[in-house]
Length: 129
Image: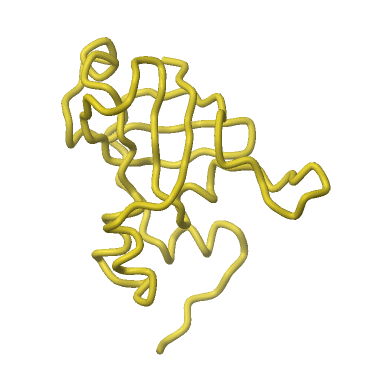
């Protein structure tokens, strides 16, 4: 299913911003909010996993049904999961496009990667703190 993705700040994401390797931050930033009617069309329920793919990348996320988002749209909190699918092109502004990203969403049984997994995919190394 093709949807238009936007991203931005959420209260849960912001509450964990000082603890980006915590389970709470991972949970808060790995949810894709989708209208309940679109979830029905996909044949899945809130809490199921989906593969979200854009021109810039792909990531597995957990769905959460909402009436607050119109059909045909999806929303994700800013963070490492959003960064996996939002391109780095900034149009010379220094800020990538965080709104109106066309994505393909399909059900999957693949696991949601950890924040560490995402960092390693782009060439980062694990470190202790």
